[in-house]
Length: 257
Image (cartoon, rainbow, N blue to C red; front, side, top):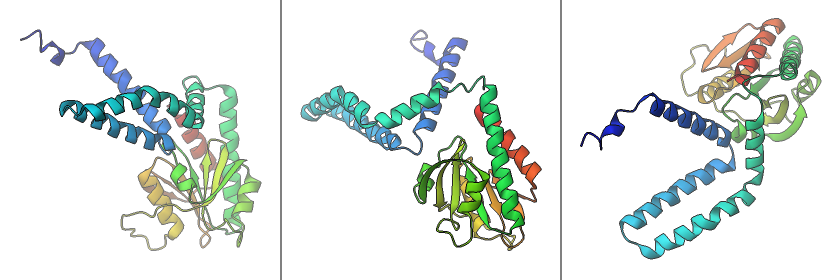
């Protein structure tokens, strides 16, 4: 009996394997988040559950059909979800443990461009909201806006938020060094906001930061104050230098995660 229950007392190797497998599955789920592949994974788990149920209930016809489906479904999935798989493999192939000097310089350039644009918008009293994607994908929010595929630049950000332009009311979503969407709609915070001076942009920034690990920048068109929302908290009063330091620090922490 003690030998059969030996697995209940794992040694350090078993614990190490558990940690490694957990980390791998966690990274895979992060890569799949916000893509069609996550829907496929949920559907596959449902089919696996039905398959085991058919074995328990001796439903031979259903079990046979599902076995055939599993046999050829993997090949079909490789064809159908080729773009997602290619993107995931490219993401895994990035050197995230030893970031190169080039990537650090690129991150600093992105932070500099965003901070410069925000400073110019604040001086002109132009409202803006910019969401910078972290580990949690913002694909579902990007779909509510106009898709873009352009490198981050202060000139482009200023153009997007020009008053009365088609995209100035929504949020810009940044992924890495690319603007992936503009005019996006973000969720408002579900918690009561005691500060009545906070408008819709600030509530949207708080809402997104509560649901994801995104870093959200808000420029108030009434006060010209620059605010930063992260983790459900809002900090106000950023100047260009302080915002650039915050963005650079955040981007480096994501790279080495």
